[in-house]
Length: 596
Ligand code: FEO
Ligand code: CA
Ligand code: CA
Ligand code: CA
Image (cartoon, rainbow, N blue to C red):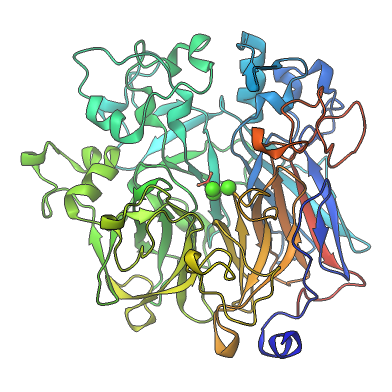
């Protein structure tokens, strides 16, 4: 019964009713206030957002599109004044630009881009670094914050680490192989113990078009990454995104980017030692011996879980001494064995099959083709690894595996136990001796997701989980200061689950293990990103991505253009305003710790 569940769970809040409508909903007794919307100004001279007169120049001074990862770097240790960092993963043209969409025979048709639209899209990608402050219990943006910064697909960056300067990353524009412009499709990320912002480049394949030259040595490499997919029209206006014209540019994307937020003019660094794949998050934790461990997911069906362990140790007394820790270390890929053990296999040139015989001539080659290295090492093919959250309180690590409907019956294994896995699962890792830098450990499944009332789904939520409390498609996660797990989802829809995406609080320890409760839910068509609990646990930041988006099956919800009959205009609800991806700050009415 509910009362019993309440008492056993580590979370004290009254659950939200699962469902779907045009608004967001948070648990009773909490406020969820819009902090930053797409188009909001970030600088004193930012132009007002004008959806009918967008320009690349104005967008570059405004909050970008499709906020995903949200991180916070305290100023002087404060949980009420700090630097917010936000990824702008991608753009939805049909929701951004009026009049470019037609429905032809029931299918969405988006008119081809022109240069201006492409340049707006590029400016809407990347990231935001912005000072924020809590005043009288409410968060506000400090527009004249000296560290405020927009990172876009045009920001100058540096390739650093083993791949920097390699022939395979030299391009028409850059004979040094070190100078890159922009980061793209930055999904999740992290904040390092030394207070920098790290951000994962995920689905980079969609930004490249054209055909590789016949004699290109990158054919197998690009095929393994799905490059080029040609979703965006950028390559028609910027040669570097056309692989027929600049065949190496795509090797300069698919990395973890580190941004030193303390210097708004710092050149972001693509940390190649952490591998090249479709990076999801980069959450980290300091191991017992002071080395820093980053957990990295490669979000594709049948791809891998990684971790990177720095060679050097974190120095808490000297920030500058940590600033290049990410250039040296060991990348490992995970092999989950049937007996419940996990082996972390080094992705290191010269070890095992990673040799000349397999076409690798250096660590740079291994890193550029990290996925092929994982294939050769026999890593375990997972159900789309998304965020991975190390928990410093209980010593465990949580891996979000969002789904994999393509897994066949004969491809089922112990750690990916369901064929046609539509709803995903969460794996819990215990590193050996509680040492996050260990090369082995144990694993078990915390939770198989989906509707527990449908036997065929095979979900494993506790029986205390209510009809509102179950979810599918875990995507992002956060561990709060008390070591409690919060999960956000991507893909719950009326069709599949009768509910929108949201934030669920999931018990990992004690008698309530595998109990889940709905804390927040998004408006129709949106995906849930973030979440982030601030250190004092009095604020949770959440990111609502692509509100109003939707498929043809949604009948009346999520129509393709806000000029048509879109059923939400979240968050402004004005006729002349499109839907706007936004970051919200959740606080308890009257203040205090969340769900405690
Ligand atoms: Fe951008 Fe793996 O989600
Ligand atoms: Ca994700
Ligand atoms: Ca997502
Ligand atoms: Ca996802």
